[in-house]
Length: 130
Image (cartoon, rainbow, N blue to C red; front, top):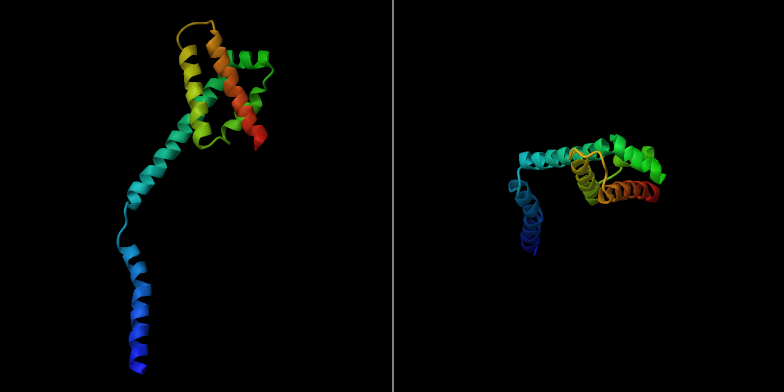
């Protein structure tokens, strides 16, 4: 009887310790790869925020915002709160505006003005909802 208890205890101890030992031995991804992935994401988010800030600093965008009655200071403050899909979408819109404004034309088409207003409204809504 005592021998059965000893064998049972040893077996249970081995079964409880085995998963922890296996988990320590094998990793699906290395620490270096994780670090690189994190760094890449941080770099992309910084680039996205910078794209939005550059557009918000553009005098043409400031004029459109002023005429529409949208406070540009709130939009600038909202940039640092954006994350994930919201940040990527706003950055893509900002890059579209920047590309259209950088086209050499001094006039703004209706679509550029619309994109600018949508970008500013999205930023303000995000601030208001948080």
